[in-house]
Length: 177
Image (cartoon, rainbow, N blue to C red; front, side, top):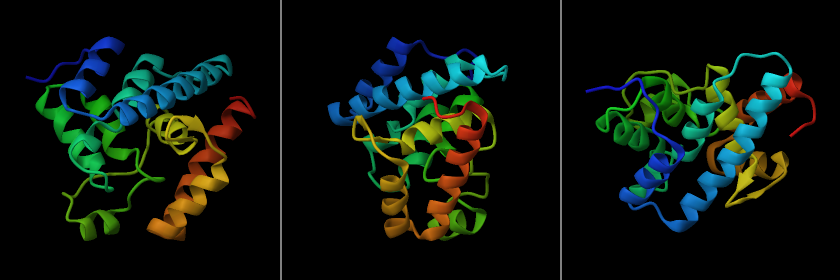
């Protein structure tokens, strides 16, 4: 049964633990959630409509798939875990779309993923992806560091997609956070 109710912060953390996410992954998820919520609040201050609760829970659970894989596949694995738990589609969508600056249809096909959209579309999806790119392990890192890593692991196109989201969020909120 699919619910339209988000888990609480504590329930989300419990889900990470129940799925055997490492303490390192949980610490990273908490740091991403903190920055994502700050970003959502900055958007709200600018008059934008953002579901900050969805952003927080999405950021907390974005790497739940790392309990099973530490490759790019963790996004679809995580989405599958949340789908099996009957969690809301907007939350599943955040998990599925957070990697890099999004995965193109062609890349998804090459990865053997089902035909779907794997690039962030909603503001909530973009905020979680944005925050994830600025947190290395559990601390803030310059976007340039992330872009360099993305380019070396996944190619310049992936880095450019992440930079596009970064610029879009910065244009919405200015330099904070």
